[in-house]
Amino acid sequence: MAKGLSFSYSKMGMYKECPQKYKFRYVHMLPEQPKYYFAFGSALHEVMEYIYNPATAKFPTEAEALALFKKHWDATSFDQKGYASMEKEAQGFEEGCRIIRAYYGKHGNSLVHPLSVEMKSTLDMDGLNLISILDRIDYLGEGRVKILDYKTGKTVQREPDQLMMYQKVAESSPMVLKLVQQVEPDIKQIRVEQMSFYHLPSLQEMTFERSDDKEMYEFWQRVLGVADDIRAGKFSPTPDENKCRWCDYRNICPVFTGKEYDGPSGWGAKIPSSGAASKAAAAAPAEAKTDSEMLSEKIDRLGALTQEEKKLRAEIIALMQKLNFKRHFGGKFQAVLKQTSQLDFADKDKTVQLLRHLNLLNKTLVPTQTTVAALLDDASVPEADKKQLLALARRLQQTDLQITEAE
Image (cartoon, rainbow, N blue to C red):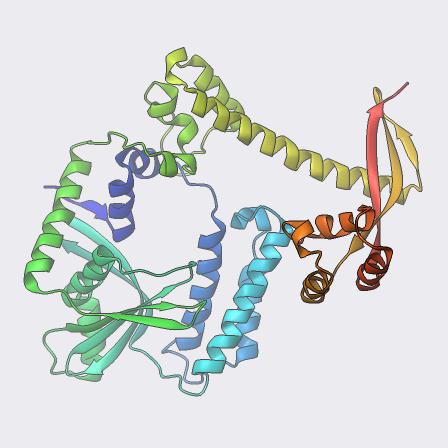
């Protein structure tokens, strides 16, 4: 029995995904890299907690909810959130604002305080220290409650283990019982009547039936089985191409390095950088690295170099413009600024309609800025048609940086 083991639905999920990954995260205590979808979800969860806070008599306005979202959002940089760029972060922020406005548009006139929001439950049960956070608990009367969980991903689907964990926790937790007894003192037993996932991006709620006693017994046996395996140190990796491809621990995983990771443990320990990971990979047996793995490494390396090049180009252009330089020399290379122009077909619908009208749509394969602009240099396109296309375009001036070897 896994006595005293700290356990949660998310920990169970990670162990089922890959025991080795669980070991990296919860035994070696190596943090995962920031994920933009976690940051996005966290910000919206904070807004929902703010809106429905039972301790606040008056519900916040839409403007106040948007202000809180912005404050939470601005507290960290785009890379700390896990976004690849400031542009991607800005898109995430706009999507969050859209969701909040839409939520108020649908529910703003019918807000009701729940029993609790973001309630953290710590429950000792069968040798487990069970930790859960319940997004929202609504009271339905006569000891019956509804558990609602907010979802912010692209899609929502039924997650049986999560639903059964909610049911187990809510019906066993003295904290939930105490909250209900503040409303109805005579209640002795809690019953989860409804469980729902609320998908914030689409404003759609999915409601699920409670599990029966047989399902709950089988679920709890699975929980205890996973806990026993963790306590017994069963952390064999379960490699899968799709899972391993995005795993933060790939560079130190024995599946790819050929040896067990024996690095430091404890809070704050960092995953080795790509340089350290490369050294670890180099020390592994040659046969441990397949062509597919080497290809993945080269793709990541090229991607990193491309991002660094984009950043350096922007910095060089900004400095040359500040100094009013058209050309400047380094020790081995020279940089030259050149003004270029590009046609921009901003109104995509009108452009596609015109292409269809002129029977040119089949020439573009896919009507992008580049393919449509290329029609202007196509000798087979009549000049009259080119004039109509040009009328839809605007010419954008751009600064291009050319790097060549210095003579």
